Amino acid sequence: MVEKDVLKLGPYEFTSRLFVGTGKYDTFPLMREALEASGCQVVTVAVRRVNLADKSKESLLDYIDRKRYTILPNTAGCFNADDALRTARLAREALGVEWVKLEVLADPDTLLPDPVETLKAMATLIKEKFYVLAYTSDDPVMARRLEDAGATSVMPLGSPIGSGQGILNPGNIRLIIERAKVPIIVDAGVGTASDTAIAMELGADGVLLNTGVAKAQDPVRMARAMRLAIEAGREAFLAGRIPRRPYASASSPAQGTIAPSP
Image (cartoon, rainbow, N blue to C red; front, side, top):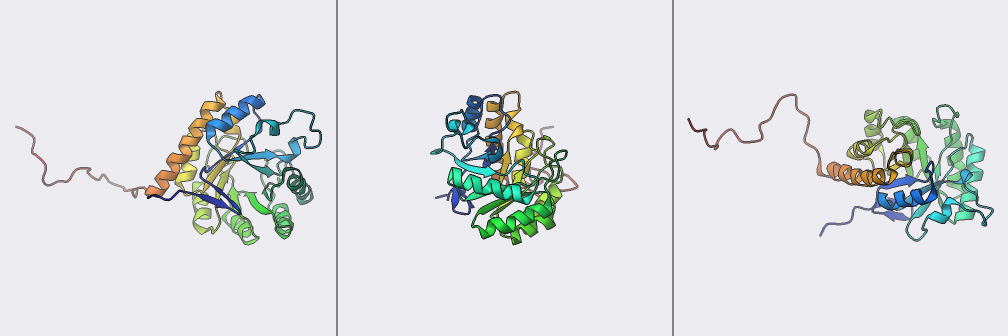
């Protein structure tokens, strides 16, 4: 009997390794349909962009089935540790969750992570008993620092947020994965299904994406493609690819074959 391929993150367990965001969709019903097509079990929500106070107004939370999906709040839009901490605390209070995707950005032009402010926020969140999934650059040193600081998962970017450039530095991503003792989830920059498959074939434990689905010409079909790519990439990684060779290698043995007719 084959055991289930389960991803464990703190107190949570998932069989889907695709994490899908909720921003940038044209409508909330379209978002809901794309989430269903993706087969995901974790949905990320940018807390600063959601109205948690006025329950009378429509919210994207109205379109997320809490019995079906686990919400992962994130601190998107925060540019310093203090703002990220306030956002994480608000999410815990409003959503009743004990985990957070920590995202502290350096500037609005590049949307690259700020390593100093990220580590500063990490230290406090760990003291406050959060399970922290930490967004970072594809720097193996920074990834190790975040792991040592207590991250439940480290989330290196494939390329800048929303860029659709795919995995720009597979060598660094592979090095981060090989050295890590916590799950590595590639986050940001995925543009199409093949990008997702590449991340999984490198050995990533999961992929988080948003724009690649939300702004596709057909978000629902792209969500389905991402699901299949996650599954294919994971299976390929577990199967173990053949080594690359500089020369050809015949598929059929040289001996014992039938000679061609004259």
